[in-house]
Length: 269
Image 1 (tube, helix red, strand yellow):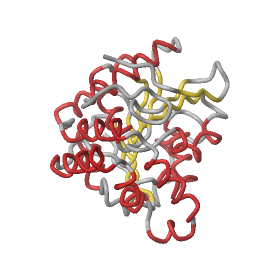
Image 2 (cartoon, one colour; image 1 turned 90 degrees about the vertical axis):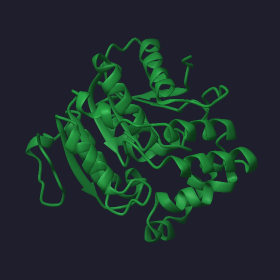
Image 3 (cartoon, one colour; image 1 turned 180 degrees about the vertical axis):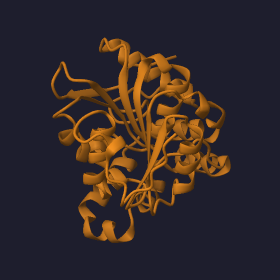
Image 4 (cartoon, one colour; image 1 turned 90 degrees about the horizontal axis):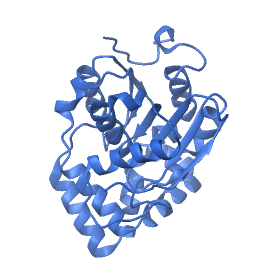
């Protein structure tokens, strides 16, 4: 059953709607580097995934259909027939599910540092650890995978805020979303995604290495792939570049189809 997720909106009310969906263990804070840059041209809606932040924490386990259903319910609540959608990691998995199963609701899609399938055993173990010891037991390791060592050292305050954010996630919500990833296999859905899709990979991402993005871009018919510097939270580590890619893809600023490809890997179909 869908739930009413916590959300905030910023930007001109009549501007095109852009929904931002975050990674496992994150809250709205994850999108701080994007909100100001994107809300000049879009009505930006950020939400907390169920089990996270200010959203309800229903008993788990959860599925991607649950997470996608929450987004459809959110769109209905705010009176939106269609929206652009950008998701990072778990948010990208939710975006792929939505674009395949509710294509009439998704206009353009951006998938950042995500994967269509991951090895399930690690997610089963992580969920068990969190249920037994709480999210604080995994928070430091999660953030270590989110940032490159150099960035984490330079931006120690950011890394600490992110660690605290993960540690503050309810154990039931975090573990139940781990189950959604454990049982996920979006590979059969990828050819059904009709939305124009931007796929962004962090060049040094240990959580979802670039080969996952390459597989997504190879299977989604109207997709292009861009590689940026940084690790899993490339939205922070390469914020300016990611913001430019998102603005262009969703129709603000320079057209991404005519953009400079000298510093990015791009695949057109």
